[in-house]
Structure formats: structure tokens, C-alpha cells
Amino acid sequence: MRLAPIVLFTYNRLHHTVETLEALKTNELAEASELLVYSDGPKTLQDQFSIDQIREYVKTLGGFKSVAVIERPRNLGLAHSIITGVTEVLNAYGKAIILEDDLLTSRFFLKFMNEALELYEKEEKVVNITGYTYPVKYPLPETFLLRDPGCWGWATWKRGWCVFKEDSRALLNALSRGDLLRQFNYNNSYPYSKMLEDAVSGKNESWAIRWYASAFLGNYLTLYPGTSLVHNIGNDRSGMHSCRSNLYDVKLSAKTIEVTKIPLNENENARSAFEAYFRSLRRPITQRVLGFITKLKGRYHRCHVRLAP
Image: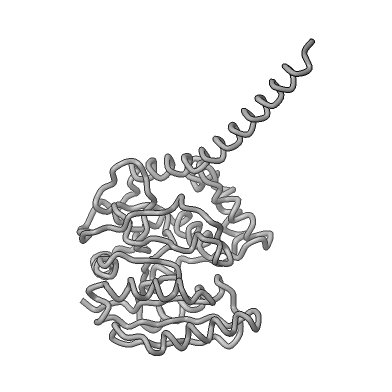
């Protein structure tokens, strides 16, 4: 099996980058894998110091077959950095495993990714492999397929990435014309189309929402593990596009995920489990609002009692 190169995108978070790479080094295929680190350029002089620290750390890194650092002289921003970097690597290697600097991986992550890339290489309908699975309440199969690429630890081939479309407006219009927005939003359980609208209006530059829309519109599939192989440690307000949250926390798989051929269609049970999970994300907010209203009612009641004759 020809191993795919690992592509890591970094910016200015040294601690997260170290954790990500130390976890990756525990993978059994790490020592046989090439690592390519794309280091984006600074927005400010303060960022330059952190970026320099990361670049020096990576240059001394062991545990991989080889390590190369691609130092961007100026800031491209996350979306442009990933789109151009992934395109460059896929043009050179034909396939790649892609990570950002805040993703802890199970020691079985690289094995799953490489085996899945090998097994589904010629399946034109499958354009992506992902390592992260939401912490749903319902049991999932060993592996399953969805029309949702995922973006927290993923892999693809050059032929898969060719379906990616950068034009947010064209993607949104295609979803609207096809009356697909409700389905795109997992039966309106999560506002993915709003993210795409924000990309059109310039409020965000998300590459991931465009990757999802591109695959969804083409009826292309992504392979998921039934148990997550990736845990995001960046939901701590340290990133440019993150907020503090533990809603996406998962327990990493402690065993190998068996990769076998499965029917090439979207798993409706898994999609329903994701939908139920997305709906559950709203409940903490609802509960806080209800709690606030209850407190207000209590205050009103106490005030009413005091003023009564």
C-alpha cells in the first residue's frame, strides 16, 4: 500500500500544534509517512513570533519518514491556505490526508485513512474519507457513507477534490433551484445554508461549507468511521473561527476501524442520528432561556406579593 502524505495546516497556536503532532506520532504508520506542514504567514508582528516558534519546532520534529515546512511569506487566511495547499499536494501526490493544527487523532487514524483511500480509490461516487464522527446517541455501523465530507481530519484524491467549487453564490443558487436547502440543513436541524449565505455576503470565508455543498449537489459520498478517530481541541476560543464549547467532544476509538466495501448509498440511519444530534445542540440554549424566564417570573411573583394589600 502506497501511503498518502499527511498535510498539516498551522498558524500561530504552538501548544495546539504540538499536541496535534505528538498524537499523530503515536500512529503506527507515522514513521512511514511523509509530513508536509503549511505554515501561513502573519497578520501582525505579534503573530510572527508565534509562527516562527512553530516553524522552528516542526523543523526539529522526528517520528515521520520526512518532514517539510512550506512557509507562506504573507498571510493567505485559512480558506485560501487550505484550498491552495490541498490542490498543490494532490497535483503532486494524487491523494492526501489533511489535518489542521487543533486535531488530536487516535493511533488508528492513519491506518483507517490509508486503507480507505486504497479501497475506495476507484469508486467515483466516493470523493472523501473523514475521521471525525459526531457524538451521537444512537449506535452507528463500523463505517457508513453520507453526502457530507466533514472537515476535521479528512482525506481525498485528486479526482475527489476536482468536484470542489469555490463559488459560494453559485452553490447557494443551485441548492435553492433544486429545492434542496431543507435536506442540505439536515431537515433544518442545523443552519448550514446560513453559513453558505454568510460566505456569499463576505461574513465568513469557510472552505468547508463549500466542500460540503459541492459534494452534496453532486450526490458524492464520504466514508465515516462509526467511532470517531479525531477529537477537536480548538473549541477553546483560541482559533480565528472558534468559540468555547464541549458539545463536539468525543472519546477517540481505542481499536482499529475495519474498512470494508459497503453499499454505495447514503446511510439514512446515520443521517437521522446526525440530525437528532444537531437538534440536541439547541436544548442547552432553550434550557437557559427557560431558566431565565422562570427567574423573571419568580421576581415578578415576589414583587407582586410585597405590593399586595
